[in-house]
Amino acid sequence: MKPAREKRSDKPLGPIPAGFTAIDGELAIGGRKASDLVAQAGRTPLFVYSRARLDARVAELRAAMPQRLALHYAVKANPYGPVLSHMAGLVDGFDIASGGELEMVRHAGIDPALVSFAGPGKRDAELEAAIAAGVTLNCESEGEAARALAIGERLGKAPRIAIRVNPSFELRGSGMKMGGGAKPFGIDQDRVPALAKHMIEAGAEWRGLHIFTGSQALDADAIIETQGNVLDLASQLAEEIGMALPKLNMGGGFGIPYFHGDEPLDLARVGEALEARFANLPENLSETALCIELGRYLVGEAGVYLTRIVDRKVSHGETYLITDGGLHHQLAASGNFGTVVRRNYPVAIASHFAADPAEEANVVGCLCTPLDRLADKALLPKAEVGDLVAVFCAGAYGASASPSAFLGQGPAAEILV
Image (cartoon, rainbow, N blue to C red; front, side, top):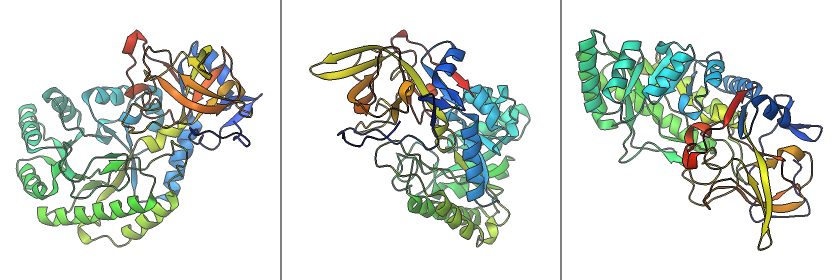
């Protein structure tokens, strides 16, 4: 979609990720027109995920980051089976947050030895399944550690345990802060050494530390600062534990642009700074396996949500394009997933992707609630009933993070192309 020139809106759309093109004037994804993809799926709404974009993002990361750094995929961002199977050929490990996700990765043929399991409320049944499978537990409390050790003893299998650390610092500018101060996540850093020593003495297979401080940061300086703090803290804790760390999960936090004015993360700067830090690591981290854990950054821009306009109406002079989709599939785009002030995601009329903006319209969903909004007062090409709307940056926290059962609507279709 071409940018507006003469017309302006006080509700600008977020930036469409670079690289999307048109075929016969229509949005193309993976080299195929949106309408053809809908025909293949047999219905709308539809999530489309692009293999080429997944491949390109991972390749970009590999090129920018130090060669020593392993790359893990956070399954919670998008657990769609074909996406998991494709990512298995691209990344070095997987991070899960439930027993359900453990079943998903196993169904995708992923080796449990490559999987780590975080989350502050692991049930005994989940701990048992993970220990039996050989998954690394990112332990989040002394109580969880005691339960894991008892289950391991009953199974006759030493649990593989890392400690998730709640550090004293946080990731500046992150969308969701998961470290620093009182948090339900991880174990406060001053209590980590004693617990680590206890677990090692009790016979657990010691797997090191997981330090995750926040997510959705676009500021390279903030990420560089946090990564430095993570390495410093890991070295300090290794010294207090009295043993070199076998592995350090440095967390992630890399964000993607969603809203007008957002600028992409300067990945090269982050990689250069991390390379410099890796060249001067303390002795107790010299042999440590180092990784980062990313979800949204890997898959977010690879996904597009397609929904069809079922009605067009005018109310008090404002145009409404009513679709068969909505917040039940795209909770974040509706502004109801942690956003304080609602702003527009990148949205386009997929059927007229190459056309210039011609009108201001509100794009809404089919639900009987005023919360069901996909774009407010957006400048868009003229659209009619039957046309397709595209919501971009839909590859992460879309289908799996939205209330698809709300009002009996049910899930959207999903395909990987």
